[in-house]
Length: 401
Length: 124
Image (cartoon, rainbow over all chains, first blue to last red):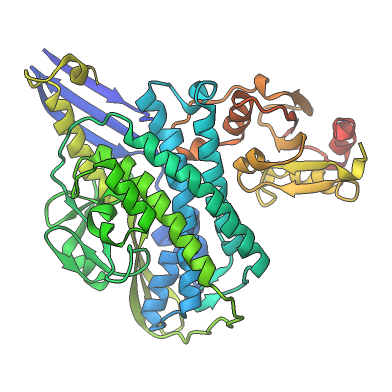
């Protein structure tokens, strides 16, 4: 008997996806995961624009991770023009990135993942019985949001970050309020860890190569080498290792390393960077009993919960040491050049690359999102997971799942 | 309540003709009430106001409408974080037992801003 299952709207993901599964006599014959959002053409949109416009335009790629695109685009342009930001600018960029990760992880964990684990159709359906949990999520989202608004000047599509520095600095009083809010929200992050450690996760080993930035000094955010359990390379070498290809059924490109899948995201970061977790995040990791490295994609939620604690600790650390000085934005001289920006964002590693001519006009652009890098890995994991449901030794619960 | 203490939450995009009428109408009230242009609907979740009055453009209506209470709003299933929209946020507030008084003033996509402002004034 053969059966074709077509899921045109996969729920609870970031973006829009479709899955087609063909099963014949207990064997998965076809498994196609596609991103089905309209084509966006952002790489084309920035061509012909000035180098200091790329981050404002590419920020619109995503409303959830607009800060990520801002910082990645700025990093790529500065890399092209040979500029290294000041320590203060780097700290502000880290805060913006970490604030966005707190907001995104809290939203993902409670509004996308938790209803599935608890058997509800959506967060709305679980609101009456899990009010305290959702209120925890909202407090963490608010804390992350306030980091973005205070540091970046706006809730979405921040306006303070610029090529060569920072346009408008937050006031000292605002930073003090922010720190207090994060200290409060950390209680919710610790509760979130315990909640997600108590859930039952299916046993599954993806066997994927897990990549993230690895920085010798800290849990990588903006700097480091792109590293897996097998290899490590510098940002500027990425085209030698990572290949993009297009499938007509999908609007997002697929990305492979060599000719095989790899994964990026919270679990990859945790696998590669756990030695640099904050003290309380390390305590949570121990409490979780998660054995690292893990290539069970279901453990990504555990990693997100632990990262939320770490990101809050890191924000507090930066806010305690930050003594804002009014540094003017460096005016960078245009030259014919090319540069790569690569940073860690909520869903994984984000790449921006720009070529700039002597007049400061962008002549070429390449953007690789975490979703594009994870797409093949997710597709192959679904294929293997569904196939495993037909294993005769599997229980009924696994088959129903 | 002192009318100057009232706040109007404004949704829409002033740069898009089909989504801008709410912002134009709100501007005409700016001397009397506090206007808050909303970038992200979740802002409402953290509002300390006891009454939340919203103005937004509604597709398919010819005359302004007033919707009172979040229980009347039907929200789509949340497919992705991009669907974390106004409807979802208001339904979530309702399900979490919020006692805030919600009023939504829906205005058409097209029309005379000054005329429609006169019609919606009593609802603010």
